[in-house]
Length: 128
Image 1 (cartoon, rainbow, N blue to C red):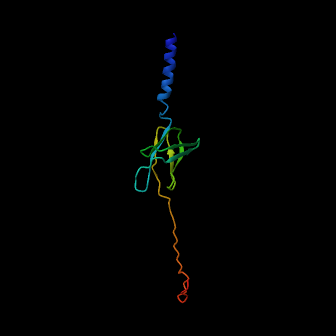
Image 2 (image 1 turned 90 degrees about the vertical axis):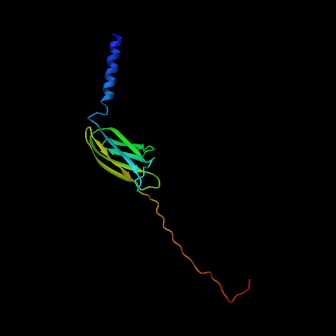
C-alpha cells in the first residue's frame, strides 16, 4: 500500500516537471554581440514583462535564455561596461520562442582639445 502511494506521488511530481516548459509557456532567447558580430560574454540581460523583471548574465558563448514565460509582451535590455545598452522586444506566444540578438556598440567617446601658446620670450633680454 505504501509503495503504491509513493509511486503515485512520484508520478504526479514528474508529470508537473515534464509539462513545466510546455505549450502554455514561451521562451525568450538570443545572443549578445558586438558591432562586428563577435559574441560578448558577461552581459547583464534584463527581461521586463507584465510580471516584473528577471535578470541573468550571458555565458561564455554570449547566449541568454529565459524560459517558462506566460504569453505576453516582453522587453529585453543588455548592459556591459564600456558598451552602449542594447534592447529589443516582442510578443511571446504560448509554446513559442522569441529570438532577440542584442547588438552592443562601443560607448567610449573622448574629445581631446590641444591648445598651444608661444612662450613669452624677450629676444633683447639676455640676462639670466
